[in-house]
Image (cartoon, rainbow, N blue to C red; front, side):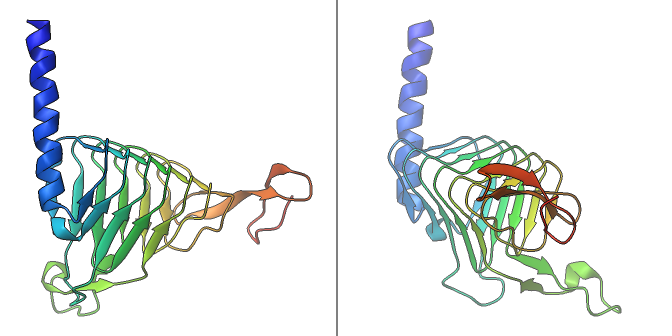
Length: 200
């Protein structure tokens, strides 16, 4: 019975890999996409080799703002946790070896709310800034990234809301997120910073 289950799981994985290679812009070797909640605009999604996207993900690339060359790309050896929500109307680029925890939201857009006579749900989606999560970054659980980028090997603490770019080799936390630590090249250590970004 155990052997049959193993064989069944193997063939099921092969079938889904074949399916994703057909519908997505690209789906790399040894990549895994486990039971996504939804995939919108699959032809605009490009996944490199050895990527793991855990169950419950919602991946969407939809030209709500009229940008028909919108794209989501995910670099090799990246891990994306359960129930993550990634929604692009322009461009979201996730680099290689990025670690993304559960329930993370990444978006390059927001709803307009400028017309106070109209419910927000009836107002248009507007693009903000393109998003790039650079190689080696780590996003903690429940992080929200909205129209901002995260630098190489930077860390965003759990529950942070990132609205402004985080440079390379920094630690950011809070709502909205601010830099609380960065790598000091002179000492070769990670060091705390004040609100102005100066070492303390």
